[in-house]
Length: 356
Figure 1 (cartoon, rainbow, N blue to C red):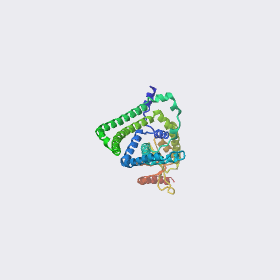
Figure 2: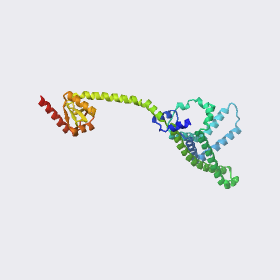
Figure 3: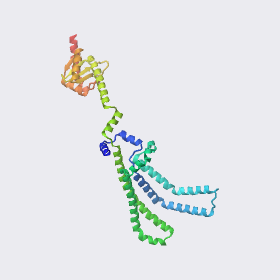
Figure 4: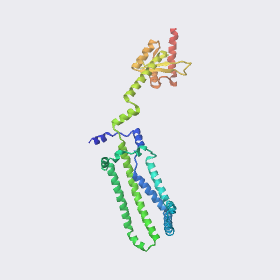
């Protein structure tokens, strides 16, 4: 019951870090049936195009072995050379098959999971030799699925062989009058028919098995809400601490902004909700710059500092709203506001001249 509740809690999609950790451990969605189907299909294609030459080389090898056995005495001195010669000739015959099997297996695995090398997957796990846990694994869903697939494959292959041979029964009787080569050709043709039918069926089974393996892999990677939170804390930091850091950073930025208000040339308001402090130094700036801005309590604080330091406060709702919405702190005003801000600055400079 506890396991069921635990599975029900794991309803969150796996995070990229979870997937990366699983891949490092060698835990990937891989279908063995796809590898088997790829190997069988590749070998079938190889036999279709090169079976004639392979059979001839195999017959030549058989004749050579029989001839050597009948004419060459096997002694301790020559047994090594004889075995080496037989092995080399057999390798020439079976080499294309071995290369095809290896290439098909590697390619099928690579197309499924890419390049994965994990030392953790090769490390010995002593819990696997525990008889009790081994007995429990016999009755897991994965074991039952693997058993079902094995039985299904055996049934399919047996059905294909029976169906094919049943249709060939009438053609088998005349084989008694055929030479050995004719019997071999007929056997190869029937075998190829069985291979082709089996390949198509195994390809369909491999596709279904790959879909199942992907589903099972994704299910195994799913996370609970608590695991998502714990991982976030490990990768991104504690949300509470991060929020506190951001608050400290905002306070520090606000203090720096308030410290720039006394050096502003004018504070433009709308008049109570917004306040934008603007400064213009022709020698250092190519355009007037917003040195501070704020809304609500911050706007009120900007006006108070401005008044206490003798910075003019000018009410202009449209300009204040545009500057507040479109210009960040320590950024120059856009060109479409040059004229409006220039008029305000001219008005402020005029007030300062009359005061002098």
